[in-house]
Length: 155
Length: 106
Image (cartoon, rainbow over all chains, first blue to last red; front, side, top):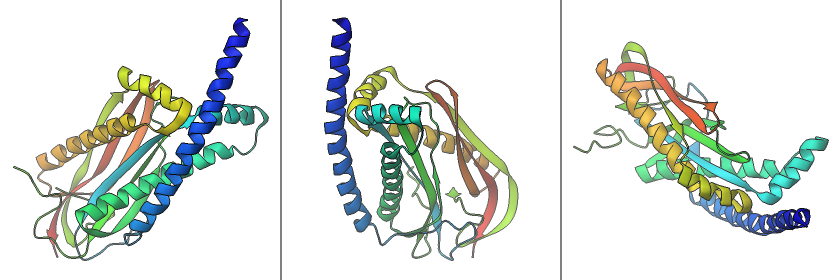
């Protein structure tokens, strides 16, 4: 009896995870496509020695995304047999795209035109298993030389 | 303070190279935020509380690095790198380092 209840809960979580997880993922993808199009004018570059004559400043953006129960079960099964874990690939892809979009958003808000020296990291931050953090940073470059350094000092 | 993760500072000439400066902070996740994360682990999606926590912590590490650079008399830090290490279950060190320099506009 107890076993049946446990199995029932797992099955319920599996279905709930599948439904909401799929919904969330689709919504996120749709939003990413829109955002990427909106900030396509901010160029990005990851060459180390590239520089400009105008001014720049560091920008940092990050995102933490959790997997759903459905992905967790699927990944656990895959882990046993080995092979490609597609469910995690899409999770990481979403997180990376989101981090880069946020970086572009910040640069656009500050009035910059491009980002140089882009770095993307996936640090292990000790969150729960199955959630992933992606950190993106770079140097935003302004179209013209600034009178004062960015960000403006608030005294 | 001008910050850059490039090898040089855009629009500036580096006149003096001072020292490597760094800043770090160790953060653990919050219990209240954890409960919410448990739910999110079922339905998936962004863990906004964690994102904010990590962003705040990185800013704190950056601020500490900037303080050190200011103490040296620098007006810019170049070649900035972030590094993150997990030191215990649920705790992480956020570390940032760079080279403090004196730069003048071109």
